[in-house]
Amino acid sequence: MDIFLQQVFNGLTLGSIYALVALGYTMVYGILGLINFAHGEVVMIGALTALAAANALLALGLPVPLVLLLALLAAALVCMALGFTIERVAYRPLRNAPRLAPLITAIGVSIVLQQLAMLIWGRRYHSVPQLLPSGSHTIFGAQVTEVQMIIMATAALTMLALTQLVNRTRLGRAMRATSESPSIAALMGVDANRIIALTFVIGSGLAALAGVMVSANYGITHYHMGFLLGLKAFTAAVLGGIGNLAGAMVGGVLLGVIEALGAGYIGDLTGGVFGSNYQDVFAFFVLIVVLIFRPSGLMGEKVSERA
Amino acid sequence: MAHSESTGAPLLAVMDLRVNYGGIEAVKGVSFAVEEGEMVCLIGANGAGKTSTLKALARMLPAGGEIHYAGRRIEAAPPHALIGMGLALVPEGRGVFARLSVAENLAMGAYHRRDGEIAADLERVHELLPRLRERARQLAGTLSGGEQQMLAIGRALMGRPRLLLLDEPSMGLAPLMVQKVFEVIRTVAAQGVTILLVEQNARLALDVCNRGYVMESGRITLADTAASLAADPRVRAAYLGE
Ligand SMILES: Nc1ncnc2c1ncn2[C@@H]1O[C@H](COP(=O)(O)OP(=O)(O)OP(=O)(O)O)[C@@H](O)[C@H]1O
Ligand SMILES: [Mg+2]
Image 1 (spheres, rainbow over the protein chains, first blue to last red):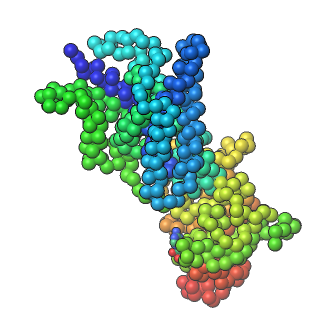
Image 2 (cartoon, rainbow over the protein chains, first blue to last red):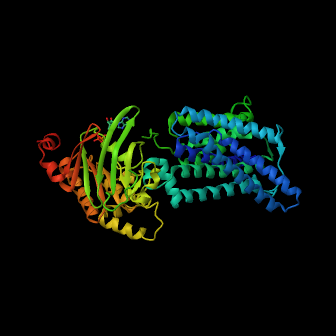
Image 3 (tube, chains in turn cyan, brown):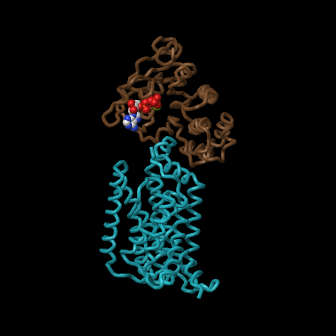
């Protein structure tokens, strides 16, 4: 009956994942002013790496929790190395190039990663082994799976940890200073290259986690999953105000909920003309509406050109 | 040319420094030196190339020529390595991190340090600049211009500089605030920090400094003690408004 709450929970789950991915976009944008369009593909690589690792470890007969942990670790390491390499090889040489150059490069990188994944894992959909508890609970009449709960809790904890890192540590302070002005931060002894590399590494670690979550949530994964997910997460980052960490979190969760509610109600609202297959349109519709009224996003400051 | 760690070598020696902006030469081969413990100013009109010179020294701009600092050639050093050698710049326009708090800005000043005396230095900076203690939790972007200048100086001091480069610390400040800023600079100099000061306010600069250089369209045209420069009719006509 009450699909509202059900869709809210579904949306929060999806939104937690969007938020983790959106953080990667927003952190890189905040520090380099670059939209790293390859980020969605890093999520995909994370998902498929975790899958490969999990299958191999399960075949060895390791206990499931250990498999989950190791698979996650493998995905994180691979993605972090990948993020580091992408920055070093593709973006750093273009640091002072016109803005269009790194953007086109980003699209190139994402095509390369997608094709690479297709060569390694093929074009088919892979079903993901059940590594998380499969129970579900009824909360105020809505069915919430344990997988969903774990996703939401893990995402919340991760975002809390990231917030602490950025706001409370020496490294986080240097990251914020560098995003305001790399040249002034350098006067204080901050090696901008190191901070930028670390930003990519952290963002890619979050992407790996998000990749594992998506495949756990849907039970399947494939080489093409990064594209739409990346686009949605980017939308979430812009929605929240790109460059703003809290904005990425709020934008991600909000987008997930709006999308889920939209999918739940669009049939009723349009008298059946549009079905829930129009779910994806919602994200972009919301983005357009928000950008008309708040061009710098919900929590973004006025974008000013950096000197 | 490579040897300069002989005793008595100046702390900073610049030879034939050149800065280009896409073909336009803003600094056309300037040479000057600053001895340890000195307070030297570089004065000149708008666009003379003063900021470009300081930025080149701080390695924020690519430059030709030689920069000898503390017995080392630094013209190929990465900019983030300089503060570790004791070379600090308070940039034109202050350059405080607007979205960081005052306390965080000061902490950034000590970013490169790993010693245990950062807290003691913070206390010293707070004593010198009490406003910064009061405003510790405020975002630097919300400070007044004078407070931002104080913060920029305090932040540089947190790095324990041996040579402090100051770019127009009086710019845009009310006369009373200018006095305060210069008092602070004098105090810092008295504590043994070597200072190279860039100023358009020539009267003030020549008043506090030992020596000075006059820069005109990318070249140094006069070099003398501050007192002689202040008495020089050319300087009086062009920069002291007489
Ligand atoms: N980023 C830049 N690109 C091109 N030209 C520049 C740039 N920065 C400075 N210039 C030019 O170089 C010359 C020297 O500028 P600089 O800022 O070094 O002078 P200044 O002596 O510091 O002047 P002011 O007293 O106004 O601060 C000027 O003609 C200026 O127009
Ligand atoms: Mg200047």
